[in-house]
Image 1 (cartoon, one colour):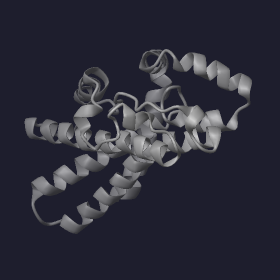
Image 2: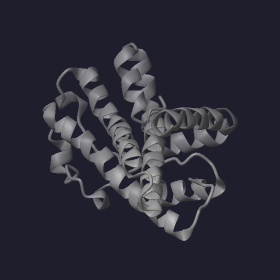
Image 3: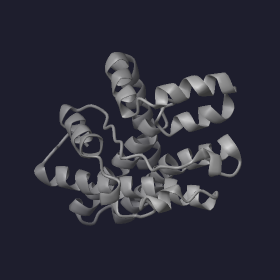
Image 4: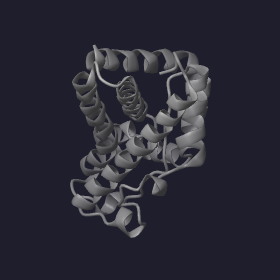
Length: 208
């Protein structure tokens, strides 16, 4: 993605982020609604409209800044609200809501990779756009599966650990995306190679 970063590619990345992020966040809301919680619907977040989910800093500026630097892209949107007390299956229901977002991105990446193969040999612009779309969605998937509250991967941890650990995680979660950024800054030498390796491994499988 960063090898030939033209103005056109930046535009493609931005559009891919909007589409991928909109579907990611909408699926959180749809799964929550399916499990009995109407919080996202009541807040107007049960929508595919990406503009409803944008956070200017973490959705637009942060990933573009990292891409320009050649670092793995990190994306985050405004979290879709849900009430775990109204969700079926308790913490396991909440885990399904959390995992719905990143696994939607993984599915989009798989579909995008299939389209890359379908359009190989045709328009270079189309193929490049599809490859970028795959890369963006893999970036969404890998980053959001980190088990750091409030990222989606932490919801699976909530469902598997005892209540005292859940309470500690809940206190950390109140810090929101600030905690994630602090952890990434402090542990970047450790986390960055992990993110890069996971991104590269999945992309090799999808685009080999």
